[in-house]
Image (cartoon, rainbow, N blue to C red; front, side):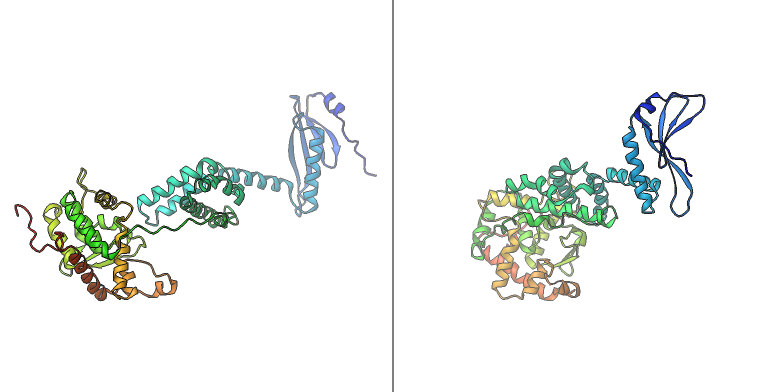
Length: 416
């Protein structure tokens, strides 16, 4: 008949004195207290490992830090695991590793790793900077030290509430997109099983879409007259007309380099890395655009950029906001921005009956139809050459009597 173990009592444990050698006090069901010669008292649990039936000892901690009641609770939990053929030692080790992994995989750490991948995709430095700055301002102070496993929709919504209250809905939507990219990265790298904030955007109102201010085609002569009277540098004047004639985005217009111009074929090829859609863009240059290059070349032809900064260092292009500042000085604030040149051109060219595909190609817009976008590689270069020549003539006609640089056939460079 098996000997029955009498459970321990707190009085018995407190009264236990150290001896020359280690000895044990049994509590039953595998739990016992080890008394060491140093006087320390350690709870231990012994059991047979599932399947292999190998005896194993695990420690539950020292007495009195771990009380008798707490030790028994740990024993009962371990025995419950054994009933499920789960090794308590392996279970506790895995649990400890998961906790450590959870604590180290904070949102900030995952974001840092994600940023490395984003930078490798060729985004512009300014784009990366603005993206990261928005996270630093609105997310990292609140989520930076939070494990990604603890982030859920309700937490993110609370953090973003100040942006909604301030009606900064555009920024709010951008921040949500960036947080989702980071959380998706955590899913793709096996850190979390699913992204719990993927639908958070639906909890907020959509921002009101505001079109870029622009003028009507009938107002172009007024603009050209104001431009002719504006007290600005020749290089700045050339930039305004160049952006208008090429219907490019502000960043694209100021970043044109001399080595991108094919004077023989009269085309400008913008590399994919500088384009918003990351595709090379070829622009047929009208006679008026070629005239702008002719005028500016004696001044900047020895430099990398057609429109270099007018302040040292000269190895950078002019600011993309230069044309906007000129427009404001001309009295068109609120009526027109430089990006509005593209809307002006689109409206005018559509009214003249040019095919929509040709116009969209000239504007370097991505086809909204995904299938067409994949298979339609046409650049419509010949058709666009005709259209851009018409656009140049239209601007020149609007400039009659206003001394447009591109339309002034008699313009001469001083001292040339």
